[in-house]
Length: 472
Image (cartoon, rainbow, N blue to C red; front, side, top):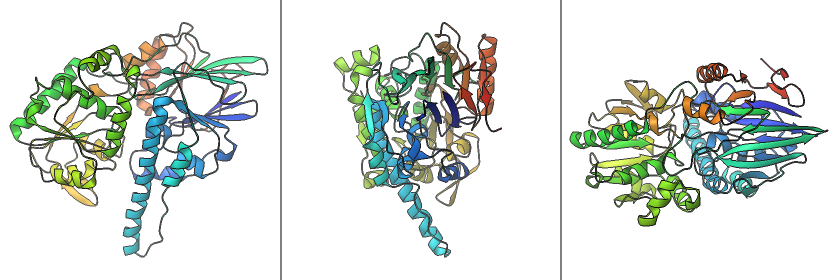
């Protein structure tokens, strides 16, 4: 009975951990490593385990940093079931296909560059056929519905309040007369946010595996954040510019639309043309609208009288031609496009055509990994390289942190305090400084908290905090 950490141990992206019970192997998440060329190149490294010997995958949610290497896992030999909450299964259907398309396009672009230098071609990390094969392995589950991915293990999903279908994973293990309850937080959302319900607490565990994306900081009050967005809208209107919003297709895009609709009159959104310029975000929004039973009380009340999203001037830019026409607009457009970290996608074209304009406003509404274009904008770099061209960064960059889909330090602590028995905690999915800050907070609160690293192993059959081994 052993847990080993691989991805998102000592960093944010690439979530991946393995549970071994009774000779079987269960993978918790299989995420893509993101954030700059060097990090992304690591995705091509061999897995630190044999994919064909993994018996099943239990997925916490659909975000690519948790699910994005599943097609690669399949390509390299995995053929077992992939379990996910029903909404997560539906979101993965579009996200994995889109990820494969991006891999193919990136390889094609790189090979054109290599051809000019007489260099050998590269292959995409995986293809759409690999994504299709992975999608066919999915089995959807409801919240609280028990299932057994491998003998001796029973799993239940609980709402994590992060994105639609996101789950806290409760893993009950029985092996050789020893029983353990492992709780994997996945990614936890903020409390009292629109559309989604609050993260669900559990009262007992023997071990908690917990994310720390924002373990070292606190978000602004949501009311202040909403007020700030309104001020950006007013400023940009006065400056006669456009507003560019790099946003993840799942979660952030839907909340931005929701806020624009809820504040339609106060912010005079009717004076703008609002574009959701992302086929992926459009499909994700439609999936969100298919799961109203997972909304919080406020959103359920809203849809009794108004459609989702409550935004009458929203235009959906599905085609490439639709997107290209937006580059001709110098003012009056609110453009929501991916990718959220500006590592690819249509937002790069809009930044290329707008970032050099002083009247342009860029609203950063999510986490920006080190090495990403989004992070460089937030850090105030004067010049940004996009598609090989250096663009002067003259736009107004607004970092609106309060909309994060991740809970902050206070939210994380509130969720952990739901455990009556104060179980030991192992911290993942956070940069070292963030994880260390949250470890100190937990210890001050009386919890036994430890950092993790790739290759670190826990013997779950013994005294869990003491039984630590692995590579340093």
